[in-house]
Amino acid sequence: MCANRPKNIQIEYSFFLDLVSYAFLHEDSTDPGYQRIATSFRKKLDAMERHHLYSLYKSGATEEIRSKAREDYLEAIGLRDSFRWGAKQDANVTHNPDVLFPDFDVDRGNDS
Image 1 (spheres, rainbow, N blue to C red):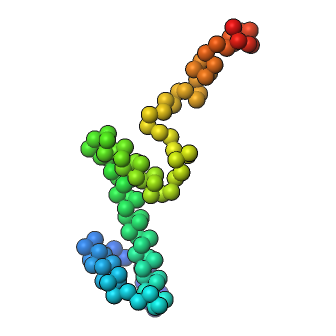
Image 2: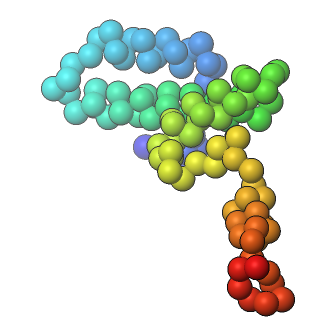
Image 3: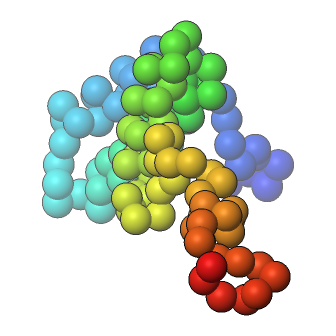
């Protein structure tokens, strides 16, 4: 191994897809080298998909496309629904005491 060899290299997208196709068409699941290659390709393809969805979420042509891409991206990264802030939720509802407690009189400290 060469000590000055770069850690990462860039290749053309089409060549990368050719490599992925070749690796999966000529699979030998008993070969540890194949398993390492297949795992690396899957990780890279997943990362590429997440990047595409994030880019589409930020710069999609319509609000509908951006919203769908956002949901797909959050699903791809594994963010549970309970941690998501929905697009239809009002950000002021949880922080505005007048909305949360409309009958509460601040001066008296109790319900009016």
